[in-house]
Image (cartoon, rainbow, N blue to C red; front, side, top):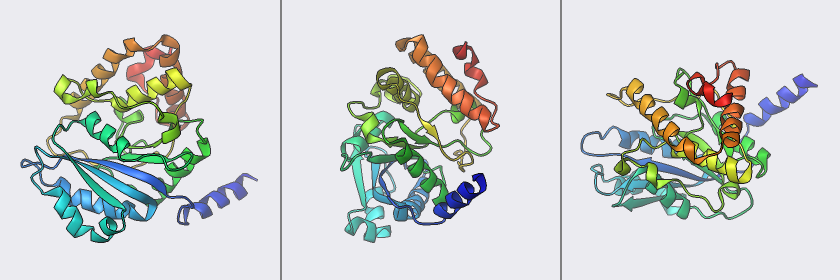
Length: 275
């Protein structure tokens, strides 16, 4: 029976997904110091287009030096013409501010509307997009959605659900938005994704479902990962006091157990939260 199920699943993965991801939301960071993101953005938009009904790109209006909206219109003209691609320029840009604008631009059109949050640093395969969509729809509103973990990245914060590559179920998120107090202008390091997961666990008793375990992610040149992930851990620990111990233990315990079951060693930096 297991082999039959495995065969059926493999056969399904080779097909085009039966129901496309409703929205993809990307944050564009292109600026005068780093124009390398623009080609990656265009490549990702085109790669995802067979699997996403509409992609929304949120552009930093103050720093955008690549003329991203016009470039998208030129390089992805068919997607723009067909209503599958929209760019939104924000002058008051920051990470959660951009994501929340993406939420406003992606209203649910049907039950279990799916929103993919993805970074231009990620290079998803069709199979991974299909797996995450299927996992989210299989949850049928009883999970927050599906998330990926990354090949070759063993940092604790990269083993948590993060908007680098996550699908959220709009029904689960109804009435919630990302915490803008965690943005850089407030001196924080983001991690709005984990905060959202904790909030949904606290209020709705929902948890995320693990999808791909081998997603490819590229770390930008010059990024000190040790320092970056240290600040991310500090940010998470700072806001944990807003949640009760049962929520913290449930959320991190479920993720830790799933990672161990996949041979990924859990999340040792947060091990004291599981006691």
